[in-house]
Amino acid sequence: MSTDILFQPFRLGALELANRIVMAPMTRAQAPEGIPGQPQADYYRRRAEGGAGLILSEGTVIDRPASRNLAGIPLFHGEAALAGWKGVIDTVHAAGGRMGPQIWHTGSTRAGAWEPEAPVESPSGLVGPGDPRGVAMTDEDIADAIDAFGRAAGDAKRLGFDLVELHGAHGYLIDQFLWAGTNLREDAWGGQTLPERARFAAEAVKAARAAVGPDFPLVLRLSQWKQQDYAARLATTPAEMEAWLQPLAEAGVDIFHASQRRFWEPEFPEIDGEEGLNFAGWAKKVTGRPTISVGSVGLSGEFLAAFTGESSQTTDLGRLTARMERGEFDLIAVGRALISDPDWPRKVRDGLSEDLRGFDAADLATLA
Image (tube, rainbow, N blue to C red; front, side, top):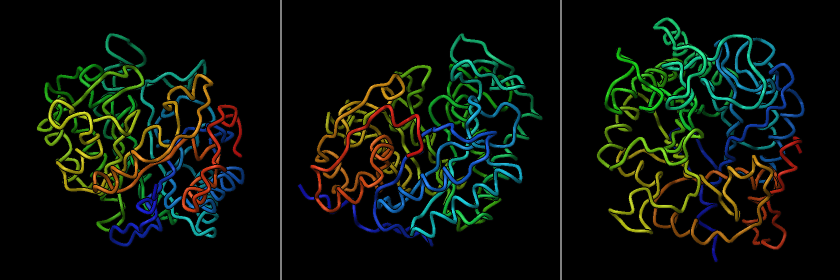
């Protein structure tokens, strides 16, 4: 099996990547007081040295009260945190890597017993359908959150990152605006249709685009599924997906990072069959924008099981290379495999399949 397709260069404007492998953002929550330091710099450096074409950082949060749901999640605001991120990107660049921060707000989601000092916030004071938690955001809260996304994107460019990604997936704040189950608002930030509920996402993208200018790459991560409901779907037809994504592309998204639990699963099998386009494939088709696919790449178990302590064994990459060779999507994000094996890209490139490590859930406890 040839993996040559994974190691073709990728270029988008001034962004040049040596290959198509992206280190997926994976929450590590090991930044004391929210300040990244040498452990984070070394952690990402090792993945750059191991051959990842692009590194996306773990989620790092905007300047809003209660924007994170774990104490160790890094901040992307404030002098100390931004200085820490400057050290990270300088270290990655020195190793020849390319990197962007994933900018985040966790909304009203839960992640264990830890609670922020301020009340958690969301569009309608819900964490899931019929599940109240925290407070509904006021117009002032919404405007400040949009501004905070823009400021964070601007800081990413100022610090020297190669791109920036906004996290709009998995049931966090941006996604809570998108989802009818958590956005019950009757004002301009709600609505019966997905395009109406996408206004917050579009305004966050516009704020980020205004802050970074026209040429700095902007990625938006989206998902159909939510951590609150794995079966949730925002768009049930290609037409609905186009109505959702095309305005976001026009707002300034350069690359859609289309998250699904298993990359090989077709998004609309009733249209193109069991080998049909996945989420990233359809996102590319309806917008014309490059896409990143992700979901259980090279491993036997799907990634949500990692958080219950389940490890996974390596599997072959035949399904992945076949989809990439037909141009279904442009880049592939790899998460757990790169947590346990920083040299995963290099080993795949050199045909060292016998040396690949599976995912060991114990590695989540360290920044190895």
